[in-house]
Length: 315
View 1 (cartoon, one colour):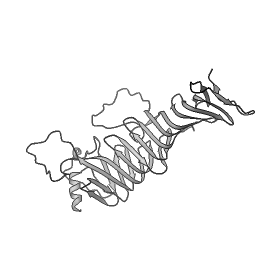
View 2 (cartoon, helix red, strand yellow):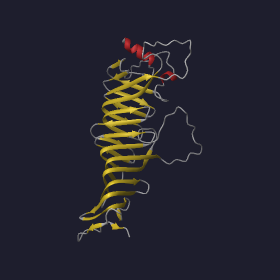
View 3 (cartoon, one colour):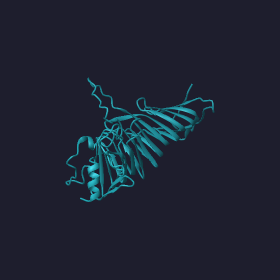
């Protein structure tokens, strides 16, 4: 074992194993010492090199690496762990620390970066990107690259530029031509989409006690199962049903009612028929859009003979 590995593993017992079947650990490791991630142990596996940079306080695992925290797994070509000294509320006055060593004492992993063929998944949800960053303090994951995609059993979120997941808010954000597509083909598209999830309805007879150190969340990649609750869109919002396409400046879609509302420069088209106005309600279950009057402009319509009936104005 190389010298820097000896120092690293004696201080960071959360870095448990190299690629199977070889496993490296320290004999004096305890469960508490392995906990470097705000309440849950992070297990790291890798096939290639391990590089520990004392100056930047990082450890880089290459050749194909994996991080597991709870039921969430991150696979990538390279994983980079960012380390810092853990805050010590009390200190034994007789215990001397090596102030010359910035990495002495208890350490914690506070940020994880993934590069190349990034795949984040749990038992229900999956996400893909070229590069990812997970901030454990904020419980926020960012994915960038080509063909960004987040799938759940109920829907698919895609984006061109950035995909975010905010675990505490149960919110997924797609930036750049973002689209949410449900299993039954309903679709909401916008420059920026924020999709909120809600836990699947369960009725346990006795609630399970929650530990203060248990950092679990429902929703995509946060542990447990979830479903789409609502989605907000800003900029070039497009809502498509089987018969109509509605566009606007901003909008909101509520999954339970399957009702969407568009505001600002609204256009609803069906074939060559078109209605224009400032607001519209779109029932994505029936495929019927209802134009609403607004103060900005009156409702205007274009009806082409032999075309299907256009959306109905509100009376």
